Length: 479
Image 1 (tube, one colour):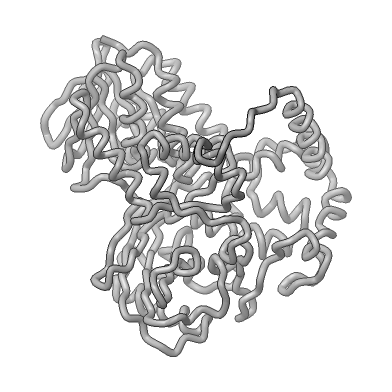
Image 2 (cartoon, helix red, strand yellow):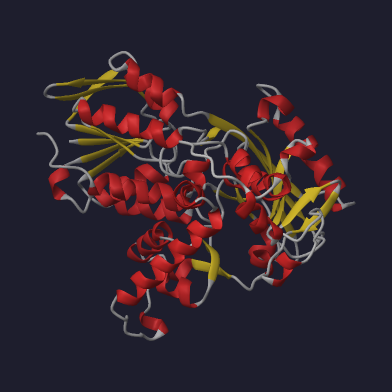
C-alpha cells in the first residue's frame, strides 16, 4: 500500500496520477484537517459572491501550464474554463503603488522607450546597464541583488520587489535568483550578460522548433485546452464556480475508485522507515505501508522524520514559510479607478499590504466590485505581531484600501482569513538544498517521495506537475 500525506491540490493530483500505475497498489490519502483542497478555497458569500481565499487564476503557456490544462480536459472540466485573453484590461493593466500614487507599469513595446513614473528613465536603458555591468561568478544570490547589479536599483525596487510580493509574498532581498530567475541568472553565468544569454537561448529554441515536424491544423472544436490557450492568446484562466472546482473534481474521481481510500482528520505525528516498509503514527495508532508520498510542507515533514533522520530534518527545516492575511471585500457598485488586474506595493513603501487584486475586473459578478487585499507575507509579524485578530486585520486593510483607491463607501460584505504558513520561501541556496534533500533520500534508500510547493515551485501548475513527476519517477514499489 502507498500512503499519500496531505489532501491539498498536490496530494489529490498525486493520487489521481497514481491511479494510472497499477503497480502502486492500493492508495490511502491522509488529510489532517476536515476538508480537501488545501489553500485553494472558493467561498460563496451570503449574497452569492465568490470569494477566493487562495489562488484564483492559473497561467497557461509553459510545460507546467500545459500539463494542468491537459488534466482539466481529462477531468472533463473543459466547459467550465473561463479564459482571460491577453487583450483583456486585467492582462494589459498592472499597477504599483509608489509615493502615495498608483502607477501603470509599461504594457507594450513602445512604452519601454518612454519615461513612465515612478521610473526616471525609459526601461529600455536597463539593457545598457546590463551590457556595462561586470559578470560575477556566483553559485546563487538574492533576486534583488542580481537585478540591482545588472539592470538597476529602480528595476529592483519597482518591478522585481513587488512582483516577488505577488508571487510568493516574499522579500526579494532573500529569494533565490538561481531558482526563480534561473534563465536570467544562468545567462549571466554562461554568457556574461542577460541579453547575450537570452538572445542565444532564443536562437537555439528557434532552430529546435524548425527541426520539429509541423502539426496539422485542426478545427477549434478538436483542439485541446492547451492548444486553445495558445491560439486564443490566453493570459490566465479560472473556472466558472471558482478554482476550488478543480480539487473537488479530483476528489470525486478518487472517491469513485475502489483503489483509493481518503481519510480526513488523520494527523500523522511520526514516520519510521524500516527494512520491510514504513510505519506511520496516525492519531496515536500505527499504520503500515510500503511507501510514503509526502505533499506536506517541508517544515511539517521535518517534524515527522527528525527522530530517525535528523540531518534530513535539518535541511527540510531550512525552507521557511510565511503567513498571509487575505481580506475579501464586496462593494455594491463600481469603485475601481480603472480596469486592471490590481496593484502591488513595493516593500520600500513600508505599508502593511502586499497588494490588491481587482477580482471583478477579471470575472464579473454583476454591477458590483469584488476586491481581495493581501497582507503580511515576509513582514507579517513586523506589522501584525504573532496572533492578530481578524478584526484588526480588517481595519488595517479597509483603511489602506479607502486611502489608496479613494473609496467613500463601506463594503456590503467582507471576509477575513489568516493563512498560517501558507507559502514556502525559496531563499538563496534553495536549489542546492533541494539537491541535498533528494540525494539524502536516495543514498539512504528511504521509501519516501516528495512533491508540493516546498521544492520546485509555489504555483498551482508547479505543484500539479511535481505530483505527476513524483509518480512518473517512482520505481517499482516495495512489497
